Image (cartoon, rainbow over all chains, first blue to last red; front, side):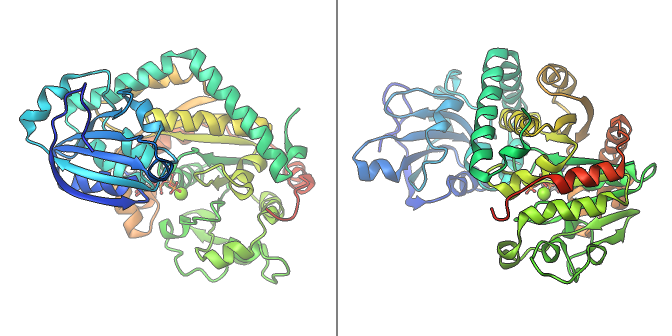
Length: 183
Length: 257
Ligand SMILES: Nc1ncnc2c1ncn2[C@@H]1O[C@H](COP(=O)(O)OP(=O)(O)OP(=O)(O)O)[C@@H](O)[C@H]1O
Ligand SMILES: [Mg+2]
């Protein structure tokens, strides 16, 4: 699987290709080996269904930089949503020379806060902390600005709250807890 | 008086257990405090309090027909009454989460502040029970988007059950994070007060390894100071114990999950 054409991530050296149920393992491996390169995640469902969804996460010294959907090129934190509950995945991990990624990593629209992939995809909360700790200062600024953008979007937050309320109501019915609900 | 707080976050690993015990210890300077490991599926409060081999735990109390009394599962540790939960999956499966309300009712009769260390997820009845049963919720947040969004979610779940937010606690904050600004912005969406910003600190992990709450292991660490500040910013309300006990008892919960 090529990392994608339009963004211009060059093809790297394949380190491994395997099926994983927890995308966090791949992220942890990248962090521990301080990988510079990228990982391609293909949900197994799409392999079986014949689709070709694939999400690419790039790394600089083990810390995630970009995330994007290889077919649509849509990127940034939303690209991780496609992977969220979609495991198991086929994961391919590629290594690249730092210089080859430098240009691509200037792209800001596909960038993710360093610990976001771990936050979303790993079952181990410590991985996100370790990633945050490993991230250089300028990358931690990505996290700050994404938090500020999130909190500045009052409409999106109101919608998130309404959705949570709807979910709470329907779950209460499922669990026989409607008697405990407030009017 | 008694007020029951669920310490919750909606997300794993934000520091609920750490915060439950740290707030509990700080509050125990002024109140009679009982902490309960209400994370019955992934109990770990026992590891933070040196109770790894406690004989009787909350799990035993949640099993129908068990002859242990509630008192048997209460341990005096670090100036608090600690009710640990066991870690065996089998015991969890045998446990009836709905019995938690009776246990909480009984404990409420005898304390000023009840802290319920709550599970990370909201995906099962036993996971939401702490926010259903509590008077108010303390939301533990990290200054990240996933944590804030899960925190909002747990707040709305709690509100659906009439459980308002007492305050939010920012945890694992790094030097370069401008939490003051974030907290100010977040306050528009969260109820209650901003209790404190607890720094990321090695002492927290060391305390866990030592099997002690942070405030016992490193009482002068900056993180411990922040938890003291949080405790003093938490306005504990007067609830009448009999009333609370009644409310818990009258919470009609179906028997099984
Ligand atoms: N302020 C802090 N500084 C450094 N490490 C921390 C801090 N707070 C918590 N931790 C560490 O983070 C990990 C998770 O903390 P804790 O168990 O309290 O979280 P939790 O929300 O109860 O987790 P879970 O969702 O699994 O129940 C622990 O290893 C703990 O030592
Ligand atoms: Mg916990």
